Image (cartoon, rainbow, N blue to C red; front, side, top):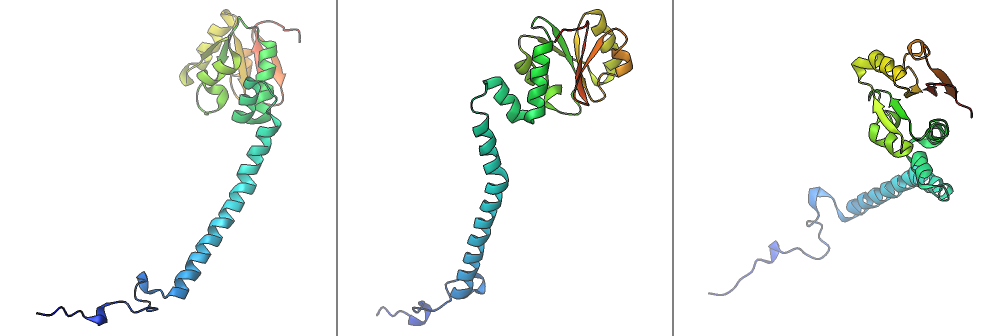
Length: 179
């Protein structure tokens, strides 16, 4: 028995039957070029809109203290300035009440605020107990962060002093603070 191979089953040089999905070599090269162009375009968009601004902001805050740098990266300039405002006005041995978790923001998170306001003791009111929490806080000499609708302003102003920071932020203090 002789070894006979069928030459018709082999791919002839230059024959386009080895490319899947019915593309010929030119079509597949055009498709690859378009994919590469799309990738390069996406990299340009991501680089210009996200990577470069982040690198610029990181390079401009490199000389700041770790806590201030973290505040700027986490919440931006307004958050960092608010943290600085709170640290200057709330004594280190004080207790601070932060808003309930919703809406989720950095200043409603006990762990995050504990980092930025350490060594102050951080507490938060539950969503359903805001009024009772503010009442207890007035009796115990707490500082209460004022963020948008928290705490109810009329309730907090009954026995505390409001110190504003911008339009929607501030702190309710148990007594006047000289700063």
